[in-house]
Length: 412
Length: 112
Image (cartoon, rainbow over all chains, first blue to last red; front, side):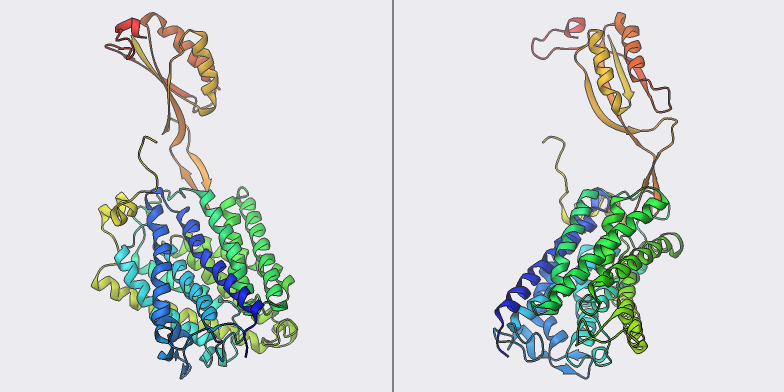
């Protein structure tokens, strides 16, 4: 196929939009931690922009999208971007340069690792975090991306639908976050119910806004073309985000007061839930998907905080794990071939089988991500230790891990 | 000379300052402080659920007055800062050994 200029322009812009989501995550998470850990929290996301970009070019893209090996993993043909050039790939996004598709997928890998950091803030040793992230990208992200999105991946062949990453990105990150938080243990003072007060809610809101903005690239860009499907996914995305933000605000109002932190969180879980569905459902389905996301994630968060006894600090599991699960299942409910001929019909269009396939995809990624993360985390814990020591934690990770602090001295 | 340290509600600063100026004291030092007396803490919302903040924001107003002005100054601050609810604050009076005006080097009562 030959290169289409409009498709190429849209995919490059989308890649840049998705890149901006990772600093968005840095702000979103950074604002929610205590002041002494603001930089360390942002640093995790920012460092991932560097680390994963590099690993992706070296071998990550090849493991995920290289020629299929038994449905499990990509081959090593694209190592160091060998043969990935200005000509289109013969199987992926065949109207844009192969490099553009590679770059777009790189941004997904980056943000997925960055999402996991919400589970470990305020106590994970930075060196251990870098080692863990390298292992996690290689052993968890790349295989799952291949299973779902790789040509010949076994979940793709079974007909599991995931438009932009409900399983690959969100369930993957959410289940892994839960496992890692369990291994790491709670922050000092968490069990004693010390208030872990967010240091800057405006920063959280700015981060959520950047996520919302970048998510247009994430979802509408996942059409990989710049036609009607991209527009449909764009509207579905905005509708779900808006509905969930408003719903979460109402939930907080019922319980106490309309919360801005709540509305920002609602927008994010709406975006999470529409991710797997965006290009398979009609845009108006963003409304039920958004409402469902806000309600499911709100009560999952309550359950996590009150019953589960795990300090999964910024609720990656409740937002991304549960939001992604709802979105993947909702795809099995609301998908329609009238929207995307390459998709399938869901339950409400008479195809109950699709819901079963979605359930399988969800279960597989849940179990694999949780178990593999547990093993990888355990290995890092035994060899180098996952946590900072008590003094470093009390002083705060900004100073103990990075030798910097967010706000300067007393004078000026 | 006596030093007066008044912990007051944030929203009462303007009234207290006006009252002090009426009693002839223009120079004050104000700082933002946190603490609590007998009043309960503040209930805030996390993404779900609530948490309690024990330390509430207050202002600390400091000034040094002549011995004969102490009663008058205390009166001025109390009446300006009072709402009658818990959390109105507290005033402390401390002895001061000396004072120096940096510009002129004047000492003692003349420096106030």
